[in-house]
Length: 312
Length: 285
Image 1 (tube, chains in turn purple, blue):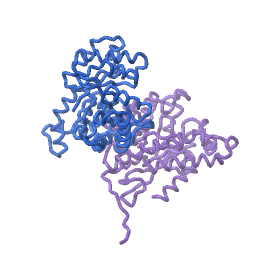
Image 2 (cartoon, one colour):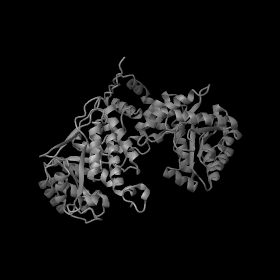
Image 3 (cartoon, chains in turn red, brown):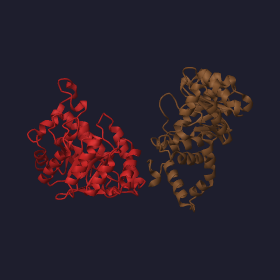
Image 4 (cartoon, rainbow over the protein chains, first blue to last red):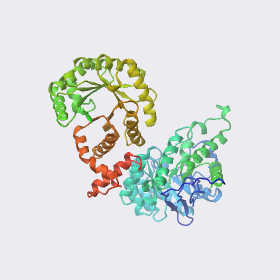
């Protein structure tokens, strides 16, 4: 008798999310575990967005900084470089300069940056705050209004500031990232709270909080995996939004992507090491179920796209 | 089912202050209330009690037994405080219960006290290296504790196995592992092993309004599994018994006329049994 591969079917399905206006990008929508296209539908591949920021990336690792030398001084040039030269399918603009401990830029500054970037690119834009709870609530509300109807992703809403940010994202027709700190139950709770405000759960993206290989990746992996299983096997609609892996900012600050070859010759080339670290971290999270990734190094993005090509 | 009244714990502010001031009033008031509400034993939790533990435990035991004709569950990690408490315990009201030994070698001497003072002993099924992963690991540790109890001269009929209830808000899977462990423990001896849980830890970390709901339905499921004793709030457990028939109806697939109650029961059972992911607002979904 011929071998018949066992197949699982799942009662649940991940919501499909489309972002942008001119050149839309779509992710999510599968009704099976990652890459299990032999069991059901996997209509979209994971979307990788290139990370840029409103201030020059002076604190980025040399390996990634030199890739953007000459363009990263200005977010518009940087965004266009990612879109036109690197063929980015989406851009993630982090408004790091608004953080009170950085340049403490105002909401008005942020509005200008977002508007300038939006008018220069056709691919979808993800707008991220500086991860300062109070400042983000004013900055993200302002940029949501400034980007009205551009179908961006706004983030990140957290337990302490979700109300204002979710209301602004809702009023201006954006998608929203809801982030909780590596706890599946709190992640579900935040999604419930956001949807109880009237925010459509099909416009949400869950960020269970990222971590880099060697620095707690297994926790993120496990939380993501359990979120996806709850979505598919238990048909838990609060857990059916796509998930985000905000990979770049976690990877490019760890020792393995920073330590010089002179200090640690047995660790191999610094550049290859860093790219490998970002690739492996992102690849692992895709396996765990992430549908949206934010990354920094083009070679890591290229490797991840190839990995997805081979497994799709 | 034996309810061991849980309210006299050093964690509660009012109780802690009374313990520090040696003020009998609040302690006796709480003890009497728990007795009237149906507790068959009173837990005296004095914490680690590193300083003055012996004197404190003796004061607690005599203070409680002055007004309540019940035995005491001596709840501390301080070996000497337990022994001091056992010395003054009035066995006329029943035999005391020591809380607790475990599979950690540091906790073995507790069994000597059990044998020496003819006391019952709780065996918490944890070892030195972290928490048990599931019901099977709990049963494995239980077997070791049982062997050690016999070695120290504590009869298996005097040993209460405690599978360690964890918080559902952070360790949801353990809620059902503990229920399974209660069933498994009973099969490990004939007559069946006695079992006990620290019930309200299930809802620790949950919103205040949710706590009695989780405690109640968890108690009913554990009772169904054959639980012998629970360190719990007797008042809450009396209410739970009123809902027992309703829970049985829901489990049997019947519709209740009270739809709110129906939804409360079925959602809570789904969370306990791991069929839906816990979130603080699970009842509102």
